[in-house]
Length: 115
Length: 114
Image (tube, rainbow over all chains, first blue to last red; front, side, top):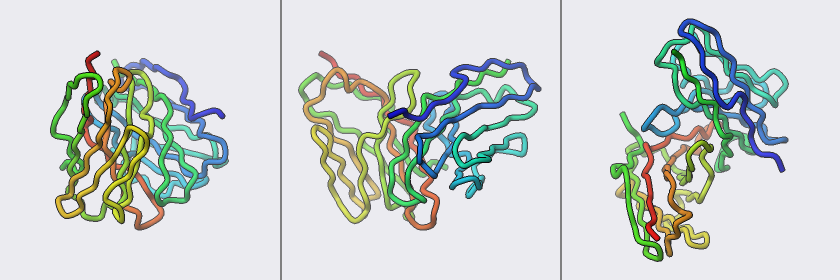
């Protein structure tokens, strides 16, 4: 079956602009996660959805970052007033569990470059 | 403050030999551990996991060992193959609560020489 998909695969934007990154999780997966991976680092947690609600947004770096999942499937990560430090690969993952010991399946990521 | 540490950034081994990738953690609340493999321009791919109630889990050529008292785990790949060349991430989560967000190490680049 289809895995996690993310669009666009690459996004170049100018400092100060607004961007949206999309994630399509594996069908039927109720849990959805966003991570950010900077160069030379491992993925860092941003936000977790269980269904439509953001159950944990403690990893969002500041209020320029926001994410939604209105119908409990597709999610959009939104970044306002982008800064050069936002440049990274943004990874989305989904899992079937409502928490607990289930592995997360990752998409290929969106590489965001802020110039 | 790195809660999951992969202190060796790279490892090179000969094809057919054993690869041992190490990982240490500091948060005693972690009780579920995973290894992910990542190729360039792809997302991480789940490899193997272990719960804290076990000290070993094996899947084919891959075995993960957990030493809770030392807060240390390792991934053994035997025999190593050139296709195993990738970046390997150790990740941990706490099963308590409904959120199993993962905390990752920085990764180890494994190169398997033919």
